[in-house]
Image (cartoon, rainbow, N blue to C red; front, side, top):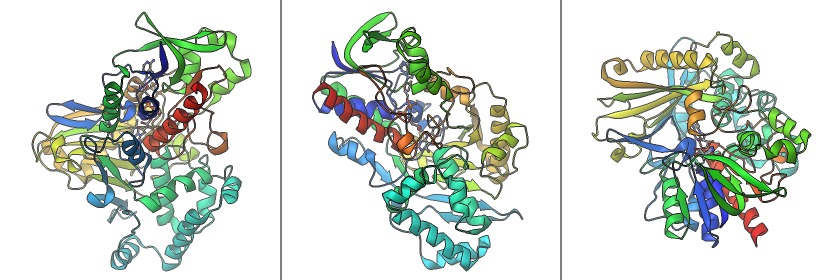
Length: 488
Ligand SMILES: Cc1cc2nc3c(=O)[nH]c(=O)nc-3n(C[C@H](O)[C@H](O)[C@H](O)COP(=O)(O)OP(=O)(O)OC[C@H]3O[C@@H](n4cnc5c(N)ncnc54)[C@H](O)[C@@H]3O)c2cc1C
């Protein structure tokens, strides 16, 4: 009998399991994958260590990751690399094809004024537009909780437009919001963007982890094992067991594991519509089930992994965008119908440029490059997106043609296989989890407490805010507190 069984070792699941272990509970952490980390899992192949797709954390510092490492005392094993130690770049492609580059902001710094002037002049940004951007940034830093409340149902699209920052800076802000939240800009609440961007402005934009981005999850698993907890990898949970409207354990691979409380990191929709069957249809109110089915996933991020035998890249992370890269609902639908922008939003991460030990040879690299796509694992948009990424990558980095020793596509089907089951039409391959769209975040975020007693949701679907993995860890903190309170 465990105190808590956590289903899923994504960053939400491991954080919750690690903290509950620290609080003294007997915890079992179960995952279908061989390693912890979920969508942000690090893998090893032919001497390389990398994630399956581009992953970079934000804010750099302070972050919930730092708090987790502090509380579990993982400093000897874990090193969180902040943006001031690394080299990252924005690339704006102008309509005439010229490229304007600018480094990522580091903690508390937006570069020197000479650098700023160069970017303004090369990109064609007027001083009035730059001034309006400063007003937008000031608004992000100074919005009060009451003002935020009023922006929960205003889209970031509408809010940013009201500052009149001009098309270049709009493309920058919009592409950044697409990248951080992976939803349509006309659906993303301004309040959610402000909460998250404020953390980025204060703490810097990029964080990677030595030994791989997913290594922190593995370190937390080590902590759990060293403190009396149980880690069950390669164990797919088939069912959450319910008695008298209360979760009492799980069934996995024909075995039953009993627990006083079950916390699911397998996604709210897969948990309710799959793992709780057959109880959900009898024990849960029909309107709750309908609400769960209607919840909207974030989009996917799909693309290509390149293995190269030369140092093709010298920047560890790149965000490349143009005026046509950002997507609202209309632009997304247009791409879904086959009309793709020539310059899609491109996000590239080269893990070994953060930690050289992630490559077997200093000159060899794994390059992860992706763009936005439908979360539907069976959507033909996947192939179109992969093709588009390949074309743009080879246009801007022609050396890829000569130095690529292996190339692998990743699609929303792969994301679903590594994280959550597809249980509702069009869902499964979502990049983040449930979309941070109006009506699904802030005060409207699904509650981590399920309608069944002793069953909780953790991860990006419940509780937290912020960008991807940071949101998952934030949710892990919240849910660990709530579960501990319930268990006493
Ligand atoms: C292509 C791509 C790029 C991304 N880029 C970034 C980025 O740059 N920065 C960032 O912060 N975030 C990024 N993200 C998002 C980030 O990875 C996720 O938001 C975050 O990792 C989700 O964590 P989670 O805890 O909610 O769940 P997940 O990571 O989805 O973990 C869920 C876990 O549950 C397990 N599970 C599911 N069902 C079962 C079952 N039946 N039995 C046992 N185990 C089960 C899965 O195996 C998985 O390990 C990216 C995601 C993708 C796909």
